[in-house]
Length: 384
Image (cartoon, rainbow, N blue to C red):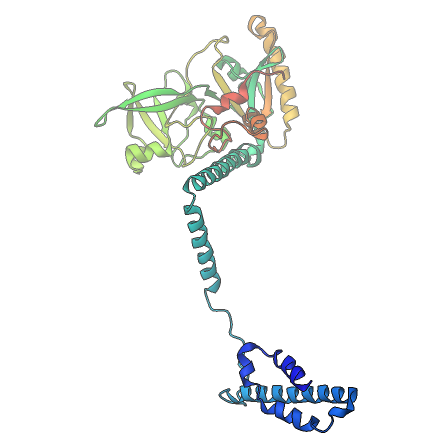
């Protein structure tokens, strides 16, 4: 009986430690039980208790033996080792290397996944950029909330183009607008000569007060003067910051120099600030001085409300002027009127639906909210 119990308890010890189970404990059990075998059940209970007591003694000796192998029984407990510096980065690098090894096993699948992710991220970034520029971010002009776009209407249907005589009538008769400016609705190409080689630049024409209306101050030089808008005035031009850098190397002597534009000398009177953009990305700006007829509609207008004047009040005034022009020119102005719209609203009108419905293309962001040429979409005819 003692042999089987002793063996059962011994097997509770891990294999590598059973060799330390001293056989003398077995002999001790047998010595205590030698004269008690006749007791039957009492013998069995006493044997079990004694064997367990011996087993406990063995475990105590085993623990004492293990502790005695330590360098010092009185060594102060060491504080836990703090995480090694850079351990997290090392773990991340291991994960990254593992991911690369896994992806390298399926190059075709990896290329497909990376391409899809790149296209998705790129499209979303582009869409956010143009949405932010066109719909969320304010226009990069001083007091941009006072800027308005003036567009012609015919029978209530918007057609943005105006004639020069109409522009001058509204400009001269308005009291609600601080200023009203015009810009040619298209860009034109010009040949610049007089240098080592001829070069082509893009340009447009604007009324002499366009930059003042927008609140733009030239980086160098000055604005166009009112006299320079007269037909007999000397030919002058303002140039973009980029062209100033390319053509003149950023030298201040650019102001006052002469550019031969399409064979005609033009004096450079000013350099526009870096990043300036309005409807067109052009290098050459010349003053409006062309005589025109009321049937030639090729101009866009932008105005600035007087401080404290509401858009509704300004529109009411324009309606009165339109009625006066209809009486004076019934042939050309019978159904013609002049609609004022917040400038940012007008510029974004053509792109807002496509942006909100995920436009098929992703134009680059521009300060005005539209890429080059896309402003035309915002002026497409529609019912007022």
